[in-house]
Amino acid sequence: MNTPAPDATTTSVAGVALEHPVLNAAGTAKSLDDVARLARSPVAAVTVGSITKEPRDGNAGEVYASRPGYAVNALGMPNRGATFYRDALPELAGAAHAAGKPLFVSVAGFSTDEYGELAHLAGGAGADLVELNLGCPNVWDDGQQKRIMSFDPELVSGALRAAAGAGAPVGVKLSPLSDPVLLGEVAAAAVEAGVAYIVSCNTFPNGLALRPDGRPAVDVGYGGVSGAAMKPVALGQVAQLRGLLPDDVDVVGCGGVRTGDDVRDLLAVGAAAVGLATAFWDAGEDPGIFGDLLADWLG
Ligand SMILES: Cc1cc2nc3c(=O)[nH]c(=O)nc-3n(C[C@H](O)[C@H](O)[C@H](O)COP(=O)(O)O)c2cc1C
Image (cartoon, rainbow, N blue to C red; front, side, top):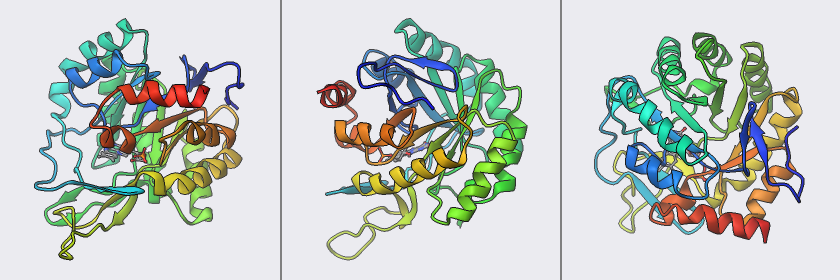
């Protein structure tokens, strides 16, 4: 297991060394400018994506509702698509590496084959780790909400098998799985298919925030729940996964990280590192939040 000792902040995820365990979670950086700003910040690695095969505008209208104690979002993974990132990733990796930080690339396919294709693209273009985002709840196609892949152990292993040989260690990011039996089946399928690390968790699917007039705060209606309300969920998922996985498969904890105590608690239940998204969005995407969080954790 990879829990840093209190007097040593260094850690690693899937063999990639990190100066400390605080990461930006996927969804917080898409452009060279985003990556450059994070590279200049105290974050331990720069995570870019999620990247999809085709460019996506994301969902229209209001897509993020922040409330005391939680947020609901349905951004719909806006990004410039594989063709853009095939050219841009070497530069993004260069910007992160020049600052002494690894580049983690999150990819999201619409089939297991697409996960494989995108993982190979990322691994071949300089990613130090590739994260298959199998837990995004906010993706709609032709008026239908897409299946959340991490609820199906066969899809989890299919995506990982398609990604094998990507040129960088491959991890998966899961939706919070409330059925402990299913969580065990998904963990076993991932291990059998050679997973290098697991990120837990993505947002809780299909939450609903309302405007004062009763209309949904996010225009597509439902959205993923994140922020402080997700902390006990993330702690429970990470603790269960730590018990289910072999020691050489690291867990990255995500959900409600805002304070040094949140970092400490996730590490205490076995996370090798922690990621945050909502606290960053709520801080107006100010990368200074990573320095504040580290100072609070190291106290
Ligand atoms: C606005 C927003 C966009 C997100 N986009 C992505 C994404 O593109 N890919 C992904 O794997 N997770 C995405 N997430 C999920 C976060 O990475 C994280 O797993 C989740 O929000 C829980 O952490 P938090 O409570 O610190 O936000 C997004 C979250 C938010 C709030």
